[in-house]
Length: 190
Image 1: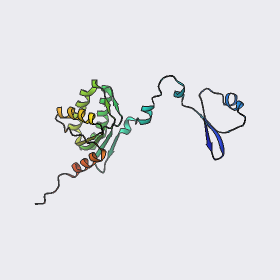
Image 2: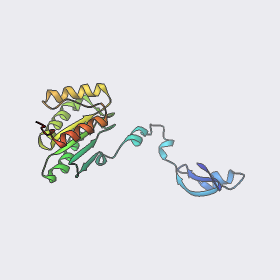
Image 3: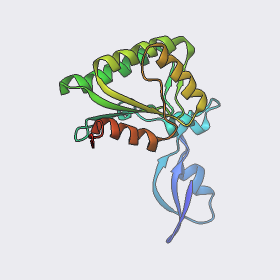
Image 4: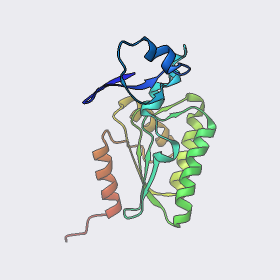
């Protein structure tokens, strides 16, 4: 791999297993600048898929949970999360528990379901987990996704468990609703 920089052509990456001197530089009519070079991603050279979707949009599991102590809000970023196993459902609840139990109080939760996918085999388990999180750890929960299908599907599952079924279409709507819930009812002006 070459880059054109201010000082000229620079060799920055080379395929795994390549002898740079013998297999590249010996065949060039000039000697480029060499920076490193670092090995190229070996996935490029395999016949199977590279898993780019997960690499590009995937967040590490722990990075999907952020607690804002000043606002007492737990942000759950389930954007593009794929829940395929009961173990993943259990891991979500365990993470919520690990964050909330030491606080000694309930939190306001805001859940991003944009691009979220859940396998049918674990839908019931996920609904049970959400019920437990609401009953033990959440003062309120606000959810959002632009997917009308997912809003309907999650809304039905939540309503069947007697949980607030409304899911906002945008993050801005969800955050405004969460803010109103944290501030409590408007004072009476009578």
